[in-house]
Length: 156
Image (cartoon, rainbow, N blue to C red; front, side, top):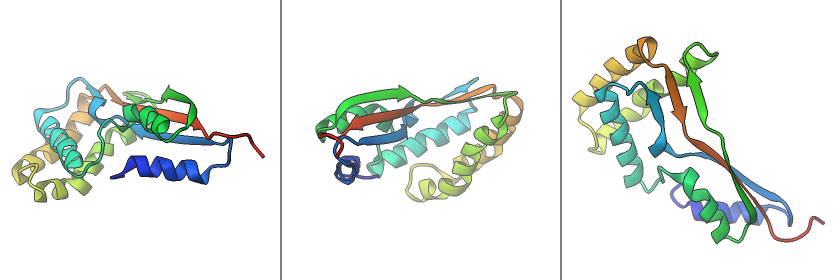
C-alpha cells in the first residue's frame, strides 16, 4: 500500500464507534534465516527491499503501524508479536521455506527490469536458494505484528 495512513483512516471510518481496527503486517527488513542464506539470495533479498522502498512500500510497516493508528486517533492501541517461524522438521516447513522461491520466480523479473538486480544475479539466486532450503535451512523467521486499535465512541 503506497499510502498506509490513508488505508488506516479508511478502516477507522468503516468501523463502528467502539469497534476495532486490526492489521497484520510484516517487518520485511527484520526477517531472519538460520543459517545465513547464500550470498546470491541475500543479494536478491536486498534488491527486493530496495525495489519495494523505491515503490514507497514500507519494509518496516509492522513497526510503524502503532504510530499510524495513533495518528488517526485510534485508542487502546496494542501490538502483538505474530512472527511466522518455520523450523526444519515441523509441518509446513517446506511450504514456508519455498515462499521466497515463489517471490524470486514471480517478482524477480520486475526487480531486474527496474534496475535493482542484474539478470545474472537473479538466475544465481534462483539456482542456489531452493537447494539451500532443502539441505541447510533450519529456521526461517518472518517478523510480523498484529496491531489493534479501538475507534472512539461507544458501541450503539
